[in-house]
Image 1 (cartoon, rainbow, N blue to C red):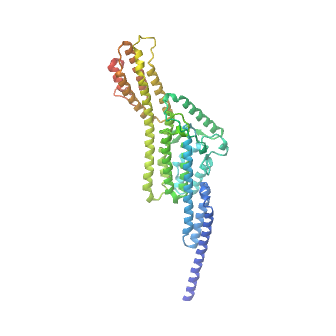
Image 2 (tube, helix red, strand yellow; image 1 turned 90 degrees about the vertical axis):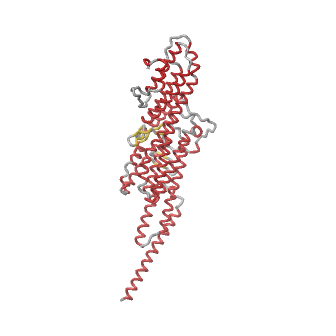
Image 3 (spheres, rainbow, N blue to C red; image 1 turned 120 degrees about the vertical axis):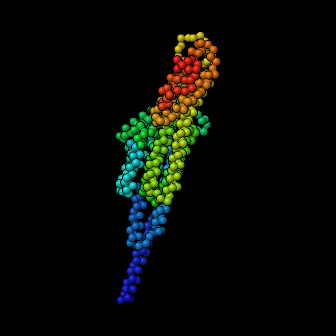
Length: 486
């Protein structure tokens, strides 16, 4: 009896070893097939790679269950190819976003509806949170069906739009024009009118193209109830971020790797944008003649939008990150978010600086104008050329910023402009040699005209008396001409 039981045990053991050997051999053959295609797999689109990845995972699970042992070798091969896929996809997107940024002319574009859908998906990943892969796959399929990403990283609309002049179509990096002799220049705000008209014309053309293709488009991209004006590179970055999220959700074992690469592309986009707009690098690489207030305002909007979506990007990405890796990755995401906030504030500071520089230019020409004030009074009751030109530039800046930036940002910028105007103008007027009644009348006329403009600027800054934007120039007016004229 015991001898029979022993023989049965030997047979069972031999059978188990044979089954395991068969499964191990199958793993080896499958791994060889994967190895032959090792150079091709990283270049596939995500859906194509997932087809191979998922069927291999199912094969491994089934054979491990039959054979009774883990297939370390084939698991390693699959994991290695998944990492190679993530690496290649990331390198491709880094190359693409650099080319897109270097060709960016910072002209506003309308926002096709599919990009608004991407933003909405960041806030509604219940299917992914609950682990419903079928529903999640449907989300991804819908997104990829609307905006297709080529293997080279280029973004195309649907088949109809592939030959249309769509603002998101990829331009080859070989077409980038490097104008190394162009000097860095920030345009006076009143001189950017023609550029602004060109921006409007381009945006209208983009909207017409979208309508011709039967696809909806909006003027802004809404996130958290706030609309953001966009340029081409901002939309392409958004599409890329959605693709990283798809990689993260469908390759959860590599979630930490994906998060690192999201941080890297966000850092690069922020740094390169700063170099191109604040650093005026766009004048060399994309041929802009100057950096206007409109360019700065649009850059602020793109940076502000990206800053606004980072918390949702982080929330979705970290659903798959192992707990042990979260603290370090969270700190990296927080640092890059802070960099975006600092960048946005620096753009707004630059807008204030531009207005200050224009004021100083006008003030330098004021003594020559004052020399003519002592002539006998003539029929001209208009403010001086100094006051009229200054007010014209302030009005133009206000119109540009009010059309592009959020109200709170516009108020913060003009709050600083008002302080600078009060300080610089009152100081300059105090030093003027006013010796005749005619000159005093002209000075009074200019002060009243400038104060009228200052009163109208959007700052939400009221004095105790309820007078908007009260300051040193008001005090100068009272001191020089009496309280009744204030």
